[in-house]
Amino acid sequence: CCGQQIDPFGDHLVSCGFGPERTRRHNALADVIFQALLVDNKNVVKERRCTGSDNSRPGDVYHPDFLDGRPGYFDVTVRNSLQPLYVTKAAVKAGAAAEAAEEQKDLRHESKVITAGGLFYAMVVETLGLWSPFSIETLKTIASKTSAISGLQFH
Image 1 (tube, rainbow, N blue to C red):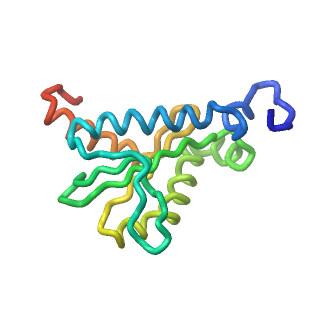
Image 2: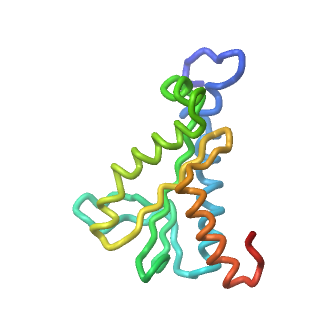
Image 3: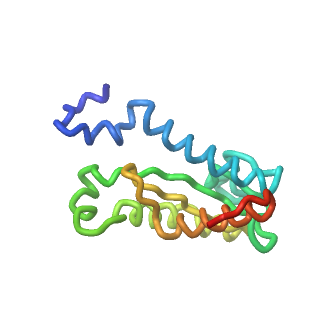
């Protein structure tokens, strides 16, 4: 539907911005993070704008008191390691696309969030399932906080 010819393996379909799948994947992950954070704090919200001069929206999910009394802004990104920009790097280094996406998100939002007194969490996963190391650590922190409140064990 975007006009590009589909390759024999369907790689383009995974990241095509004209179809609904890319947005569905992103929103599904943001919803899971939102639901997990709600266990810790009922004031968690979606689509929070950062207080600052440009009023940017660095958080798909916002937790008002995530760590040490500071709010957390969680920005979900799904990156396709099969797109031409990353495929060569991803063939050599697993997670290359996630690493690039995390750097881009940090450059775009982190300093604004810190200036506003918050903590920025780029939650990056590649379309084939690999999460960035920072995202994995953040997910573990969320799971630990959730399990402490819910009583369910986290392994």
